[in-house]
Length: 77
Image 1 (spheres, one colour):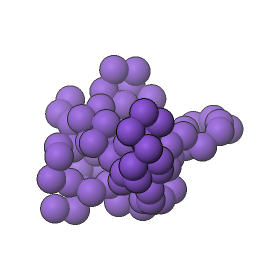
Image 2 (spheres, rainbow, N blue to C red):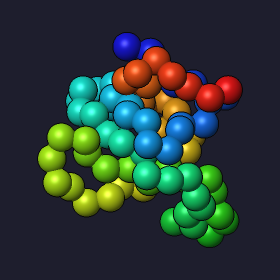
Image 3 (cartoon, rainbow, N blue to C red):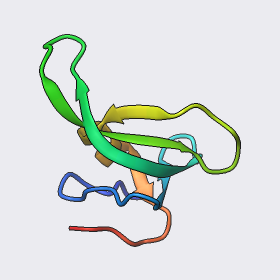
């Protein structure tokens, strides 16, 4: 399974698979989060599990791009 890559912005409503766990997640939004160590604002992705009730997760966009694959093969470049 191949990560979506650094040039791809996840699409809201699309499903992505975590490469290590195989869990499926739906992207809820793209936003900003404050970096805990540097204090600057960085791009982020908010998402939730597709198959079970779960909390919302937010992670740095860069991290999402290297740890998730597109479940549907549809990506925006």
